[in-house]
Image 1 (spheres, rainbow, N blue to C red):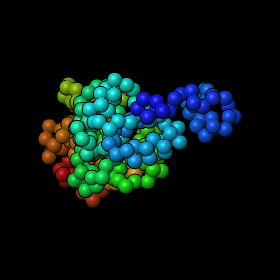
Image 2 (image 1 turned 60 degrees about the vertical axis):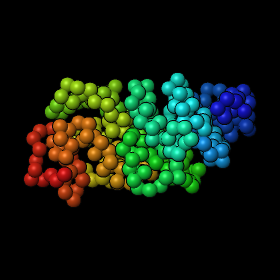
Image 3 (image 1 turned 135 degrees about the vertical axis):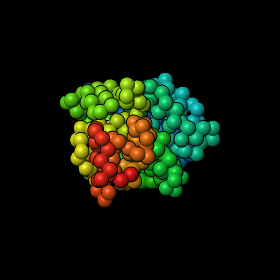
Image 4 (image 1 turned 180 degrees about the horizontal axis):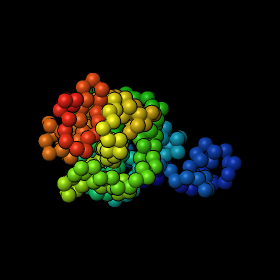
Length: 271
C-alpha cells in the first residue's frame, strides 16, 4: 500500500487484455489519466469503503484523517475533487472549504461534503460556503460515486463559444472564469460562475428552478431546487449593489429567476 492509501502504480501489468488490467483499466498503458480524489475523513471504515469503491471505478484516492494535513496536501498537489467530512478533530470541513475557496489555486476545485450532519441548516451552510454537493451518512457507495462523476462532468463541459460577455456593469470571461463588477474583480466559485454565465447568456428569459438545475447542474444531478435559491442568494451578495433589491438577478413570482441587464422591473419581479 502506497502513501496516502494509494496502490503502487506497478502492481498491475499495463498489458492490454490482462484480466487484472481489465478490472483496473486506469492502470493500463495508454489509458486516460485517473481522476484524483482527495478524501479528508477521520472514520477508518468510511475511508476504506470510499477507497475500495472509487478505485474500482478507476479513481486515484488520497486520504487523510487530519484536516490540516489534507488542506496542506491540496495546496501542494493537483486534485480533481475533494471529499470533506465536517466533524474532524483538528479543523472542520466548513473551514477547509472556506480556505480552498479563498485561494486562487483551489478556488474552482469541486468540493463534496460527506458527513453525518444532515440537518437542513447544515446543508444550506455547506452550499453557501461553496460546496458543489452534500452527502449525508450513511450513504450508498454507488450513489456517492455517481454524484462525484456528475460533478466532474459539469466541470468538463465545453465552454460557451462567446468567451467574453458584457451585461450592464458586469463583464464575464468564460476562458478564465473571471468576473468584473463595476470594474472590480469578484471571486466566484466554478458553479456560481456557470449559473451567472447561463443567466447572462439568456437575458430576460425566465427559468424555473428545475430548468436551472437541468441546464447548470446537469440532468444527472443529485441536488434539490433549494440549491438554486442558495446559489442565487450568494450571487446577489457578490454582484448586486443591494442584495435585497437586486437589479440583475430577479425573482419572478411563481416562475423562477431571470437576468436583466438594464433597469429593474418592479412590476414583474419580487424579491
